Amino acid sequence: MSNVIPLAPRLKQARSVHSEAEERAALAADLIDLIERVREMTEHVAALPGPSLRIQQTAQQLLDAGTALERAVEALTENGEWVPF
Image 1: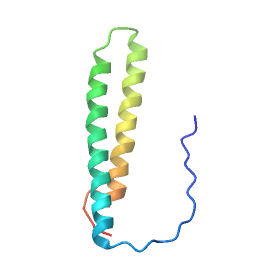
Image 2: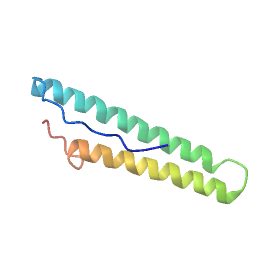
Image 3: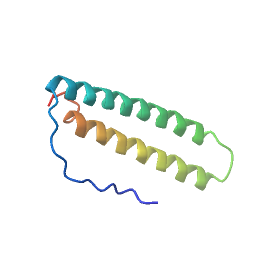
C-alpha cells in the first residue's frame, strides 16, 4: 500500500476567503475528531489480551497515526493559531 498521493498543479478557482476559511475549519474539525478516535482506539488496543509485543506495536502505530494527524492540524492552522487564508 502506498501512502503517497501525487499532487497535480491546479488552477486557483475563484473562491471567497470566507468559503475557504470555512472549508479549512471543517477539515480541522474532522481531523481533531479523528485524533480523538485514534486515542480511544489506542486505549482499547492497550486493554486487549494477547502477546504484549504485538499489543505494544499496534498501540505505537496508532500513537504515530495520532501524531501525524496532529501535525496535519498544525499545518492547516499554522501551528494551532487559526489563520484564515
